[in-house]
Image 1 (cartoon, rainbow, N blue to C red):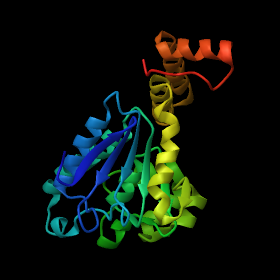
Image 2: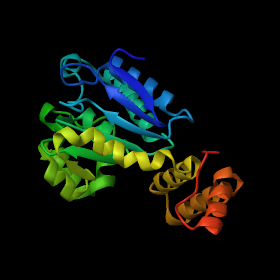
Image 3: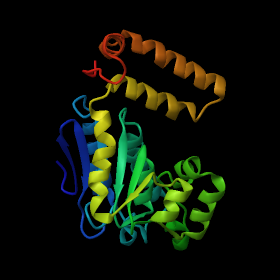
Length: 258
């Protein structure tokens, strides 16, 4: 249990909770604790994950006061650690949703981009403001953002450093759902709850096939899919799912995650 980041698990759903007043700025300690929480969330008993910064703010980016006087060597190392933490979140073999309240800026948005889904409050603001500081995003913003919204929209957001309102974020596909601010966590919980009782190994295979496939040519992606598909025929969940379908119809299987 970290000082600023903790993992809370209930009913198979793990919540990675950021809690560094006032705006959940991502300093080295938060980065290390986020990585630790992501590793803990990889446990089998955690079937889905919510990333949440609290009722007021998701994460307003890096700690600029710390970075202002940093040099190349220091930032090369620090950005590597931050990218590593984001990669651990993105690499979780289970559904992950970012529950966004208030601001998700800079590293905060990059953390949200590492999730599979994003639920935002009506007054949420998202952006990559690094260009206004004379730098660029350094924890995935130039890579995950264009893969999500397309290169032209990503360039607009990165080149201007502007904040994107929740309604526009929904329109361009930056977030998947917009709800009243007070309902953000519950909406994220409702979104992932359906997965907590699902076939964990099949969900992991589906996520890996999609994510890995995006980075390769079609033929290689199809081979990734074929191998993942065939491997699932060695699982208890495949047998339970097909047996239930034959005996009771679709959508009634009970899965154990094995």
